[in-house]
Length: 562
Figure (cartoon, rainbow, N blue to C red):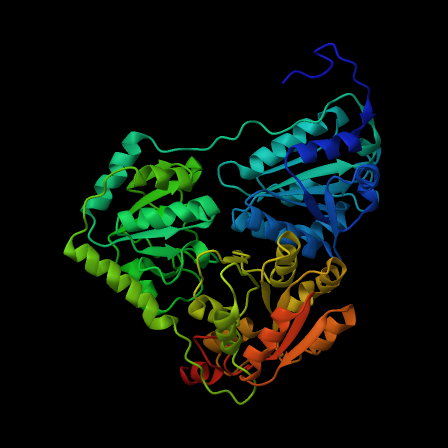
């Protein structure tokens, strides 16, 4: 599109910050998350006169970045976070790293000192290329104000291209205040990789000859459109569906083609579904550590068909029988347009067995616990009470094992979490979801470790009057570390025995949230019912068992295995 100047129209110079705001709006940005900083005051001032984009002010840059990450996972569009200079950006970096590991589009606008101060050791100067360049898709500092619209447009493009991920744009303070003649610049027409007829023929041939195929579905296939076509594709080709880590919601878990989730320590029967397959069809997944069961699947004896929109990922980690550079949805839709041969009796039996391997371990089996409530009782209450539109934001920790093992995701439910395994996303992720979807049931799950890393965002939930229920597993230790210690050095727990926790119900009440407590297994369903009926944020302190520190292990069992 030609500019106004090129068309001979009158066009007055405007402050760069105002052009920046208009450019963001053209890219579909309707809200961003931030901790305000003096390095981007010009942009905040532009919002004062033209508040077309909602600003969600947070209490810590780590929480703000996690909220933006969650918003991206929920909408399928790049999440947007603003933070200030060195300290703000480094606080946000854990979530930026999580966006990289999870291949989630995230656009980060970080303030910078004025251009005349760079390299003169001013307060809070930061070298963003050195700090973020090795794991972000692109890092750029706007040194020429006229180029800001162009750089912003490129940032949004790169965050969503190939393997999606984080992009960092550094904004020197004086750039935003400069008068420029550049116009706002919107996105280029959307495009995506699609399979060729030759690709489809080759995939169909490999699937037809397979005796025990498995379809592994990853993050890139979790959009609403992809989820709809996934069911048809799996049914038409009689494929067991295995979800990558944090994506168990891609298909209803009671669907006869669902064969379990690959991630943190799945049961042996679910591992068998992946390990015994002769053909692995990976769609929308990079097949990284957790999904590949620590790089053991695919094995040398298994054929891998890898469908992914980034050619650089194919043959990068594994020898690939067939690579198809394509986005997930058009690939599966194109395969559905073909006539799949009827499955053999052997294929029918394989599909049924794969689903039964999941079903056989999916029911919650409560264990006795004298030192607190087994967190599985909370998950069971959620299973019984959450509606078909519920969204669950999960942090990392032993408590999450009951969710992954025992919670059956329904048709339109959503799961979000940090694939990187970093603590801190559970609470801000749930709050971001409640801001985006105020009419949905939103539940956040966190341990006491993650809760005290980003729990200050409960203040944001109260400010936004977010309808969110936050369960905090309070067992007084970094439970996952204790579990690893008992495996590596049984009976020699060290460095984790002196944690001091608040009563998290009182902690929530101090911010203005409703506080509730679970002290017995019988409390769980009653407390959840009360929490879901409340308008506004609810914080639930779960007096969790340390002995039963995960769905798979107890401390006693681990010590006895020495």
